[in-house]
Image 1 (cartoon, one colour):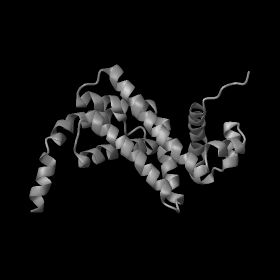
Image 2 (image 1 turned 45 degrees about the vertical axis):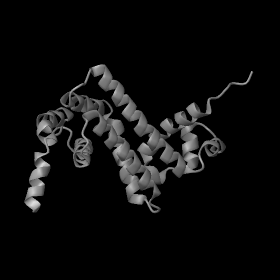
Image 3 (image 1 turned 180 degrees about the vertical axis):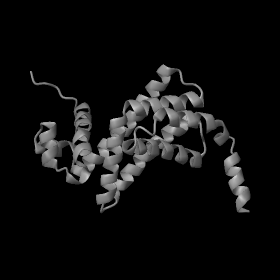
Image 4 (image 1 turned 90 degrees about the vertical axis):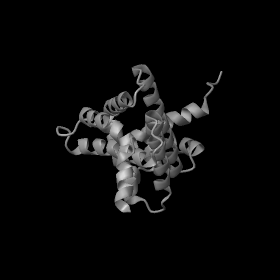
Length: 199
């Protein structure tokens, strides 16, 4: 009796495995032939599931971003994180637990940005950035787009700084500082001062 294949599950498995090659070599240097070899499938199988490398890449980054948010949700529930300060702590513990993965994502994004010619790959990366920003907003109950952007920048900046100087920058330190200033940030005082200064 032939083996029944769940095509959605198999497609997602291929996408997860493809990340390793993209992370190692960068988007621009990976070919469909190399992907097929890495995934131990024929190029025909890849073309059956994905129209081309761009489509595979787009589906991969969206799947991974969605899975990251789902994993963070589980970690928060298990940690009983009910206050914004506790959610910040859990967020940085989550990032630290997957540090190499998130560093690989940043390097891959830099590669796409550097060699992007058509512009469409940048739009899918912006979509994924919005997935992460929305997750931070929901977890922290922000409702302030400027604050959401700032917090996401702090997260990305911390990951990037640790790539260059891991002894000087730590997730725990960044988390502690954010927890201390979070109540001040959410009062709106910073934004009111800015408005008053512009008048």
